[in-house]
Image (cartoon, rainbow, N blue to C red):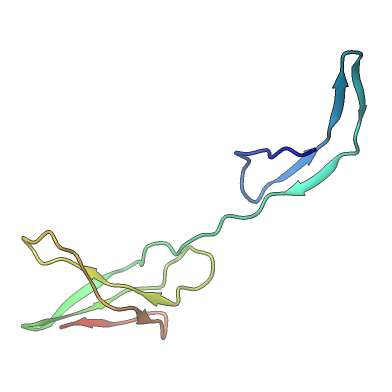
Length: 107
């Protein structure tokens, strides 16, 4: 026999036991089983301190700090941007992480 108990809290400890039941009543309880649910996998949080400087008539340099939350270090970043008046968002290829603060130039 098996049952799946859903909607539990992630990364939490629970105790379970099973008692059989029939028309004559409840049977004896199983031993208590202690189990912890798995932790949630977190994606990186927002990149804080995003700054932009127009460096030439056709380019902008962006910089930001490492996200404060997430499961593990961010390995790459994607930069999304949209030209004013247009509804089409564009994405720049992944940017490899080389340090805490990473500059990125759009041309």
